[in-house]
Image 1 (tube, helix red, strand yellow):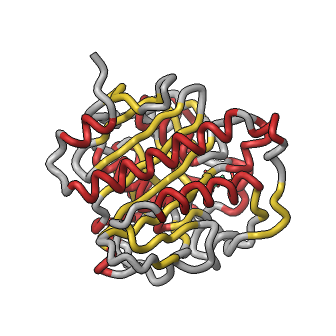
Image 2 (cartoon, rainbow, N blue to C red):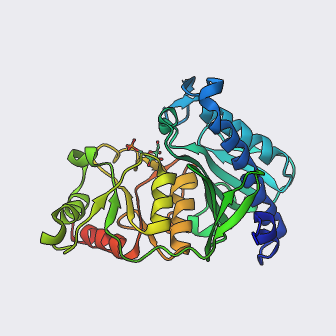
Length: 316
Ligand code: P6P
């Protein structure tokens, strides 16, 4: 007997407006999944021919996914503000809606042309408290992972549930109360950036590379998909740690990943599943944003691993 997302949401002790906003993001994700499945046939991979506020070349599917999210959100009068990685400014709907959605409509899109898992990340906040709220103020956070199956992962802050899209384009519950294992032998970092790393990142990674012979005293494996949603989903399912730390090249920008629609939602999800999420020096959820597109260093996942990284930062 399966439980649909709609049935599961109806049983949650949350405001029905919030539940409906989650359902809106799930519907948008299901539509994006359908587009991605046949994108190469429709000739929709490749560049859109312009860049986003981050100065990154927008893929056609970035724009299509953003339009899909915009369309679904525009039909939900409970959502009055949209912040999107693909839009320079926040979109204000004159509907008096109580909620704000911040989203990366298609994260990891550089993987689209090579058919590797990408995702949609979202964060839901109280619109009356403005655009720049700490991650700890999130009412809900989640992501869709477009992989061999389409997963929809959701938290209201205290536990994490996973839904999978079935053949009738309905999300059904496939895992509830997800727990990130405290220990792990797997880390995710772009090691091609080693020359930019600070002493803390280098020290932590060197310990892992030393394996059984090093201070970590165990063998590690390394995975880096180049798609945050894919790496985080793996960590939720089997443990691990994801690092996109501040380094000498990202120092000026304050990091690589964005706080409002990457760092914060993933930090809420991983923390709700018993993991930890830090910049290395500070809990990501405690950061007071100053700009809707600001960047943040991200170190999150299995608590024992994140604690080791924090210890390196304390030493550094
Ligand atoms: P790099 C994708 O562009 C992204 O924002 C994340 O999804 C991913 O984890 C990271 O950047 C990949 O960065 O430096 O390996 O290309």
